Image (cartoon, rainbow, N blue to C red; front, side, top):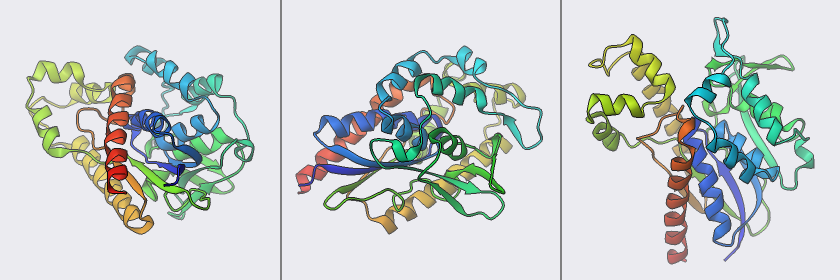
Length: 287
């Protein structure tokens, strides 16, 4: 059984921190990651890993709380985005110096979407952080990246788990880590928690929304748009899995933590590692 892995990490906002635990488990089971690709948060974690700085990034994420999240948020008065997104990239670059993608020790690629044409844009060379910044440009939230006549937004719009873009080597196995799904049944149970407990556990973005929307109005513009977006991305990721037919697909559906729960990194990392261990063990048993 091959021990070389072509690894692909999906989009998913803060839930993408589970990718850190997934990578740690893949390596703990003796696999060697020989190429990596990612989308949005998956592109960030994949890039940090390819640069050899994953442990440093995990330690830095431990320091993130709601106060620091606000400090790293450079709000904008623009009509097409809420946050510029430069401050967070600059903070991560203090840990992970920018390098040309082609100089990374393993092949890496990230995907974004051209708002003008609706087409996927694949980054295989050039600045690592330019690729990451384009890939994480969540529509209406982060400022889009303008490059070569394109307006680049989040890659999750077109290819949330780019298993067809990762560099393959003879004899390797294709492993996808998908955090795009939500467990809605469990999520309903979470919603039934006492209101005060729910407020304490909510992400910063949701707490802001709660100030504007009454507690008893869970079906509103914000929740509708958020769920519709999540469902569309999820369907695209499932279609990609059908097309690419990965050897291993780790499906990490998380309901308790949302796309902006960056202050819950350790809990998400544990979930990612546990789910990956379970899936790899099943793969071994079936061989």
